[in-house]
Structure formats: C-alpha cells, structure tokens
Image (cartoon, rainbow, N blue to C red; front, side):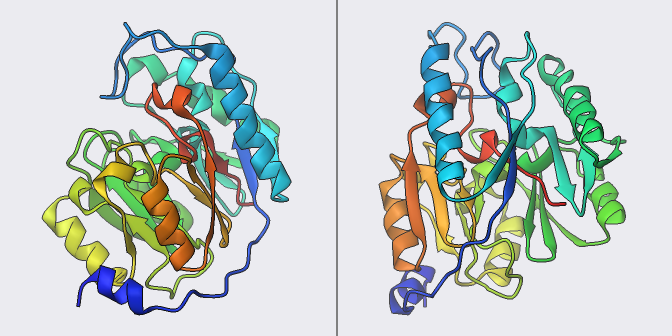
Length: 286
C-alpha cells in the first residue's frame, strides 16, 4: 500500500495548536548581491520594500495565531540575516550557535549568539560547521539532522552530546534543497509517536536516508516536486495551524486532508534569496 493510499483512508485527526515563541529578523538590508545557492541570481533585481512587506505579513500571522515573536536587530552587510532559522538551534534554554559554511554569512553566527546571550540563553559556541535549525529539526524527542551541502556531519554528534537526544543523520543530494528544512516539514513537533507528523520530498535524499524516513514515518505526507520547488515544505506548524507558501496548493490540500489548518503566505521576494517561511523563523524553546 502506498503512502497516498494510506493517506486517503485516514480520517482527519483532531489537532490542537500550542503557543510558540519565535525569533525573527526584519529584512531591512535584504538584497541578493552574491550567489551561494541555486535560488540566488545577483543580476536579478530585488525589492527590499516588498521583502519587508511580505515579512511583516508573516510576522502578523504569527501574532494573530497567538504566538510570541522576538526580534534580533538586522546588521548592515548581512542581507541573509533575515533567515533566522539558520542562526542557531535552541532546546531547553540552551542555544547551540551557528557556524556558517560560506564567508558571506559567517558574521551572522556571532550576531545571533550575542542576541542569545543578552536574552538569558545558555550559549554554546559550536566546534563544527552547522547552519542551525536549517539543518536540525526537532520531532518529538528526536532530532533529524541534515548534511550534504551545509552542516558537517560532525556537528550531529556535537548536538547529540549537547542535548542528550537521539540524532538521526539524513543526507541531502539535491542542491536546490541544501538545508533540511527545505525538504522536510515538521507538522507536530510535540508528538513523538505519531508516524504521520512530518512531510517530505523523497527526491531530496540519498537512498539510505529515504529508507530511514520511510521506516520511521510510514504515514508521512509525501509532497510533490511542484510544491517543493517553491519551498512549500519550508513551513511552520503549531500542531494545527501550518504556515506555508501560498502557492503550495497541493500541499495545502494534503494538510487539510490530515486535519491541519494551512495558512498561505506570499514570501516570493525572500525566495529570491533561497528562503521561505521556516527560513525566516527560529523557534525559541526555553
């Protein structure tokens, strides 16, 4: 029986939202002046005012859902700082800092760690290259950890030792999905025994990683290439409400079938830098 057949037979679950705290960064300096991922084209004009307006809609959506949003000040010369998910990984008030692969983003790591320290988090300076919650996703008590393009696999053992949790390594093979949060959406982070609480794009992973995902999450939502290609999987869920790319209409339908409430937001300007809803959102787990 395929995952699609399984999904069709499942009755929509009753789901409950829970309030979250997020860290975001206004895209005051957003532009695309270099190319470090396939989405970025420095010769293509960007509109900072449009990016700010779209970001504000995302911020207002979170506030309207009852979530708390904290802000880190943007730094001139760091146009990608708006993608706050890459700034660290936070569990139980411990903030594991980011160490970026490309020189263009490396100053973001200290900027985010300074913010964490000033706001009462126990900051841990990383020993290995990692790009924060872009490549670390908490699913129940398990941490799914991405590698292949950005975060080094050695950072996975560092995270396992730091947080004392099971860390599952997944290898990305498609450069369009260079962070784990572009290829997997965590739909119910608080439920560890639900085999349907993630969505993912199979073609983003190597065979070993795909086998792991199929074994662990046999009822996961399998998202199509079209929705994934606009970073539809780069989404945020509170257990019921799922904020997604507004153009990811197929994923929207799949979510409704499973009892979630998808909310579409247009972040097309920020997509020019290779980021979507999740990229702009770092969860602060105190």
